[in-house]
Image (tube, rainbow, N blue to C red):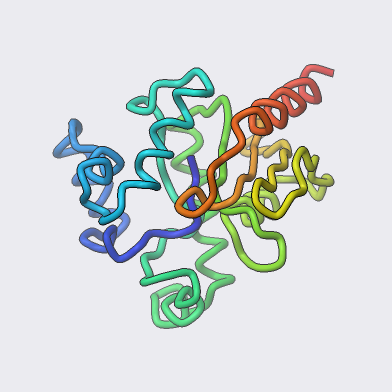
Length: 194
């Protein structure tokens, strides 16, 4: 599960600090913390745990990360916060984040499916960043083009590994269409099998 970027609720650690904290406290789950109200409203945490279950996965075995390894108050502040970071620009931050995703996250996770839950194409989003980095310029497979439930699939090629990927609207505001996600995933698996 790939979100866009971390909120200020995630800003208690650096990226390296979060890895160390996870190692030191393997039973701690930030998503479970969200279910307990640690993120304020529980809507996103609830959807983040329900979606993997509806796709046949255990949410406790699901890797949750962000496309951009950066915390900000909201999406509108990302450009400014990126310029103030050591990356110095959103473009540099995006490259560095996708390099980490390619070198660390994917080899450790060995994903069967990537669900990116922010999928706007007119501005940076989790799905757009992944598609631009790993989609090999192949067209998106739009399963649902409605504004509320926009869902599309593509195949991400990461370290010579082909992984079905599905982009959905941000789940803090939009209820994901499970059937559309399953259809997008099935279509990408069929592409890989042919």
